[in-house]
Image (cartoon, rainbow, N blue to C red):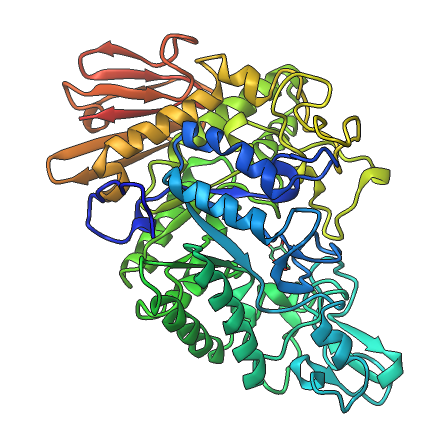
Length: 550
Ligand code: GLC
């Protein structure tokens, strides 16, 4: 299937264990037709950026037909492209070109719910006797007219996960927006239909799927209330039901029946690594799952150490392969999160911006040297902050617009977004802060930029088997410092990350005599912070990270 030569893997395992993924949010990556919304041709035209950067695989958030109540996670046709993004021919062209350039492509698959405008739901809502009625979860009102249980939907914590459908006199379940009714996976016809969606895209040549809230496709048959201590937390973060594992095993068998190591990445939106780990099964459920506790960890060495220890213990004991992610389309960007933390300390804006960039750079070193598969989110390689969204600009029902701002490609007024036939149209959301100086073109010309740091890190990772596939050991450190030892055969690297605001001198086991500096997050020499103070001592700057070969 792939014409390009694959890099030999250090371990001889499947490609996705050593790959670095890059998440594309198609609405906001690049706009080829100048209508202010990104599209598949826009991605095609910018693939060169991703090749230059050095990632291995792309994950595309939904581009299917959708009324866009949840910007594509409300699918009205799983097997077609929404006209705003292009058409199936544009998808095929993108996939072919990505493969030719050596990039794998996985796509989002949204199994738990459809749009309320999907023909299945339109039919289901047409009458209680309709063919598709039981494809969705309907319940009669309880006596006092209230919803069937106490579940809360995801975006509006004051709202039940149920909407009453007057014409047919029943409530329907939606763990997300009312425009996203939940499918009933107890129905064999639903299972078959959703498997057919997978086959449609596998036959087209995709390398796998990121399965949206995959842990929600099984529910307890009597839909019991969430217990009082957790009632009020969106039910999607609580739903953890044994039957789901069986359903995922069937999905996995289907995916494994195709050649070339297609991959199933689960969005298992549960709040402990232990709970998430169970969805790897005995190597027969998801290949990979996002690790949300790490995504939510603040910039703090102790918290990261705990997240890493827990991940190594819970996944390691099952032989499951970890993933690491700092940002995605559902959460404030990590630089913004670290920025806010600094604001709370009462710093002035310029200091905060400098510090949060230093932290974002050090975090890139951490993300790309942990044991597991890293996922980058578009724009983190530019050190983007979330856009400031004024109330009248807000669009998303889940208040996630800030991290979804369009990627600034250059310093022109339209930042590369208004060159097509509709030139002059504003993009669908405002740009992130400082787009005139913090854009791809400007950072590309600055070898000290965070963009070049990401590129160097990806190159070092590619060239260093112990970083891709080696063992991980946490080393003892001074307070506020995190240190990883990565080793494979004779190859050994130390990664040391200072999460504090002060310089720290490293010595002893952290910097064995003869160590050489491979990468410093703030770029060696520019701030002068990382320097050897003698043959076995090293000065690490505030919020600085280094990789040493030892
Ligand atoms: C997942 C997606 C999110 C979406 C939700 C409902 O969490 O990442 O963007 O709103 O599922 O599909």
